Every structure is written in structure tokens, then in C-alpha cells.
Image (cartoon, rainbow, N blue to C red; front, top):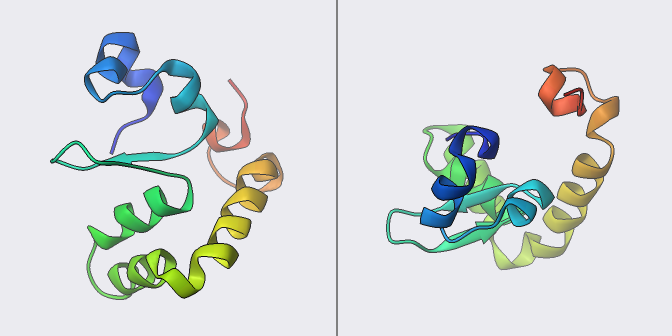
Length: 93
């Protein structure tokens, strides 16, 4: 996993993404080139882990959780500046 700012325009182009796409949401690009955006990107990242994180990824990606997970992602991304954490997560650049 890498921040899109580290990739530069050519790195993003290699992944089939533009800078504005990368800035608009989290993305997961699989080894086969398939791309997932938003809550599905988070789900696929979690599915690469083990234990409860992997299970959480499968739950988030499930059809029954699509609506609630998408809404949760939207709320967290919209208000991330209010959450504790790294400066990049809060939007301080």
C-alpha cells in the first residue's frame, strides 16, 4: 500500500488512475489490474491481512453490507479531519 502522492503522475498512469481520481477516494489495484474504489478498496486491503481484519474485509465487501459500508466510507472520508491520527489523514498538508 502506498499513498498516491508517492507515485507521481506516471505511477498513477501505470495503475490506470488519474491524479484527481486518486485524490477523490481510496483505491485498491489488484495484481491483475482490477480496481476498486472507496469502501471496496478498504475491504480488499483488509482481505490481504489475517485474522479478524480479513474477516472484516469480507464482511465489508459482501452484498448485504454494500449500502451501510458505502455510507460509512462516505462519512469517514467526509469528516476525517475531525478524527485523531496522522496529519495526512486529517488533511493537513
